[in-house]
Image (tube, rainbow, N blue to C red; front, side):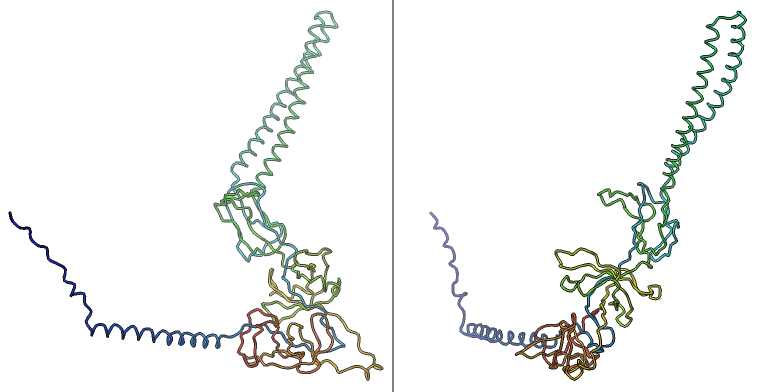
Length: 422
């Protein structure tokens, strides 16, 4: 019997790591471990350098001149330009748009045609109502001819009955025929009136297919195109428009602001206001308080104030929904001459309270110039609304940081936030 072949044993010596290989592998690991702290330190240095060079974003406001004889700012507030006459024009019926005769920015007159809807069905209903009216008119003419003939027969039957030639029954039949025709004529005339009413309804349906401007203004939104379906009621599926256009009467623009209820006592109807648009900070314009809405917002603790713009037609750059800052003005009484010796130092300027910072019992502000901030100690006086008098340290016209990080330091580079108040 043959002996089975002996299987070859695995050569474990091939897996042995030589001394040269072992030394090279250990050296690579030590290099990697040594490089990790260096890389971490480099990353920290780069991040610190980038953070140091990052500019803080701030808002600035100027220091106003202290003039006790002129109008003073009693309160500052922010709001928006809001038109009193703004309308989203919609169709009274559901229909398909067949014509649009305006675009955004188009000036329209009162009653001007804006769009048309498919009026084929409405016109067919109008033609049907007119046909019913004409048929009722024709029936009246026929009944009148029959009535004249029946009246002749009635007179003849009456004469023959009086002569004893015909019976009373023949006379009664002739009388009934006359009365029946008179009733039919009355009914036909009522049918004509009903047809006229249906014609009015059908004509109104045709007129509803034309959409016109309810007042003169400017189109600010085009909400439908030719071929789309419009309806006064939302279909819910998103395929039906509920409006055709939005028109704004630019002559009705006014300012709407929310005033904190803690300061609403400083506002009164007819009070003079100086307003400045965020888009045009170099173009202030006068305004006047029109009304104070007699209710407060419970969530925001504010009261809504509406302000009329004086000579609105002169400012063509005032557009709806623009942001605006307003300063409610008040006239302070001049200080009596006999008290001039007793009064303290006069105010050099007035600055917003939000610009004042405190440290160790002293007040200071950050002045902005040449892209940097400068810390300046100030001596404060009396408060006036949202402003405070400065007796020393600031001059009128200086730009002050009113909003910014608490970590600002003297000499830090900063960037002014776009659209901030000036």
